[in-house]
Amino acid sequence: MLTRTAIELEYCIEPEVQQYCGPVFFTLSRQKAEGNVIANGSFGLVDTGSKKVLVTCHHVWKEFQEARLIQENLEMCISLGRGPLVVLPPGSAISEDRKLDIATFDMEPLLGVCGGRKFYPLNLKPPRTVKTGDMVFFIGFQGHHRHIVDGALHFGVTRFGVKVSSVDGWDIYSDISELKMNPEELGGISGCPCFRVRPGKPTELAGFVKAVLGRYLCFTHANCLKKDGTITKQDPFPYLDEGEKRR
Image (tube, rainbow, N blue to C red; front, side, top):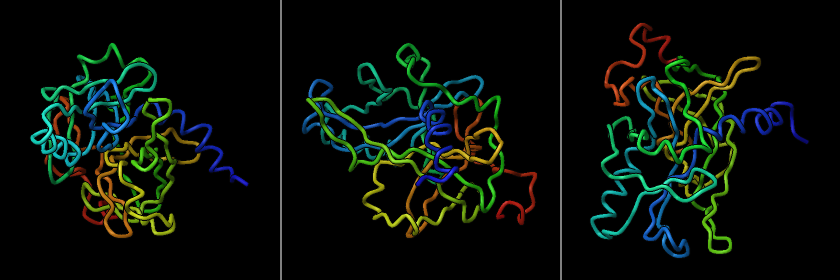
C-alpha cells in the first residue's frame, strides 16, 4: 500500500517534474532505432531569465564528442515526448565545467519543438540551500529501461525520492544503499534535474545528478547556473558560514 508521501510524489509532484526533463541519447540513425542507439543520459530544461537552456552532465557531452571522433555520423538527440526526435547541434553548447560535471546548451533555436515540455523558471525561483534531511525527487531515464516497440524508441522511467545525507560546497550527497540497486542499473540518470520537496511548500529545483560514488548519489547544486546560461566557478553560497554550508 502506498503511503501518503508516495501518492503525492506519483500523482502531484511527478507530473510537474516530468515537464522539465527527458532523455538525451546518442544515435547513428534518426530513421531506425533498432541497433543504432549506443548510449543515453538525461537532461533538464531551465529558464535563467535571459536564456532558455538544456542542462546535462559534462561527462555525457564529453562521451558524445569522443564517440563522434570514431563514428562521424553519430548525433546527440533529445526526446521531448510526442513528435520527432530533436538533434542538439554541436554549436549549441554554451558552457561546460568538468569539475562540476555540468554542460549547458542554447535551446532558443529549438523552442518551436519544445511544446511538450516547460523550462523551470530559475529566474523566478532561484535555488535555495539544501540541507541534510531534505527530500529530493527526480525521474530517472535509465539505459536498462530503454527499449524498442514497433520500431520506435521508448524510455522507461523510475521515480526516485531520496534524502540528502550531506552537503559540501556545490556537491549534494544522498545515501542510496537502501535502494538496493546496482550502479549499472542507474546508468542513464546523469543530468537528471532534482527537486527539493517539502510538505506544503512549492517544488524547487535543487540540482542535477552527476555520479554514483559508492553508496552515495551525488548532485551538483543548481546555483552554478548563471543568468546568461554559463556556469559559475564562485562559492555557491558565499553568504553562509562553513557550518551552514555543510549541514
